[in-house]
Image (tube, rainbow, N blue to C red):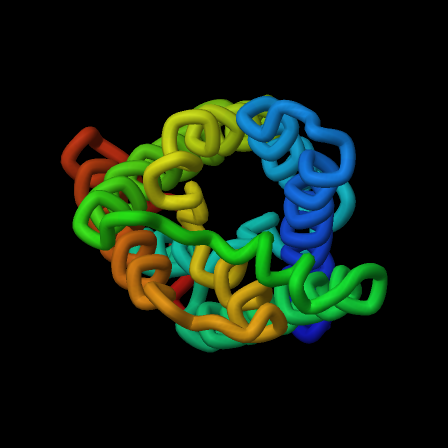
Length: 218
């Protein structure tokens, strides 16, 4: 059933955002090394989500990923909208569960943030471009190892980007904590940067010979 794909996107995004958010809170509770715990939290959270429900929907869990897949004709327009809704809902539920388990102040500490909007925008654009170029390539050229490669790439992205942009590369990941945590300040960066990065990644993918086999036209 089509609805199962959208539900899978909600569940997978929930796993990613919940595990990642709790890793942020874990560093605060234990004085753990944020630059180790949080990248691993999001990377391994994504790995778990991919292997839990990725076989149902393709394992996007990120509106930027779905945009790139739609541009590459691997996803229909109706699924683009359905996936986006599922991803937003999954992220919201994840942050709502964090709220139920802790407090709004705790949720607000999981909001992606930055000191300089220009720097953050550039980083979100470039990091998403890298992320999506990897995803577009590995899912076509080496699907057997795609889950591990994609997850490790997200770990690297967090190591590189956390101090400068929060390393979101995912509008849904930033939306859930922003709404439940009560602050949308700077949220536009996490929409414009990742979506633009995804579109440009697709352009590079096509320039480098990415094919459109298995295209979806409906």
